Amino acid sequence: MNITDQAKQVLSEVLREQGAEGIRLSSVAGCCGPQISVSMDDPEPTDHIESINGIRVAIDSSMQGTEALTIDVETTPQGEGLVLIGANQCC
Image 1 (cartoon, helix red, strand yellow):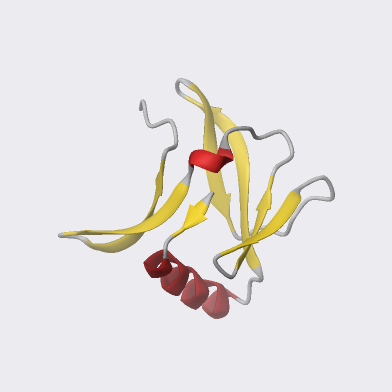
Image 2 (tube, one colour):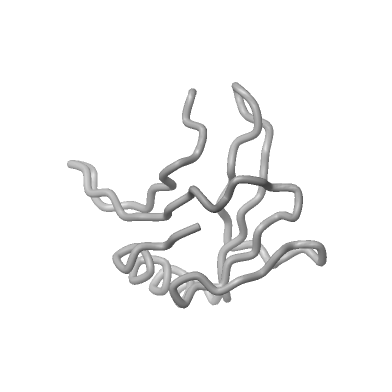
C-alpha cells in the first residue's frame, strides 16, 4: 500500500481534527464481491499494523492484495477528497 504525500497531508489534518491515531482498512460486502472500507476505527487485535508514509494503518488480517492500493487526493468541481486507487470499483 502507498499513501501519497498529498494524501498524507489531508489524512494528518483529518486525524488530528478527529483525535484519531490512524486509519483502518477492512473488507465489507459489496455489490460485486468484497469492497474495501477505510475508517478511523481502532485496530482489531488481529490486524496487521504498519506505518505508511508516516500514517498508522491497521489492515484487517483477512485482507489480501493491499500492496497494489494507493490512497491519493483527487480534485473535482465539488472539491478535494481522498481516493483509493487499485480497489475493485465495479459498482
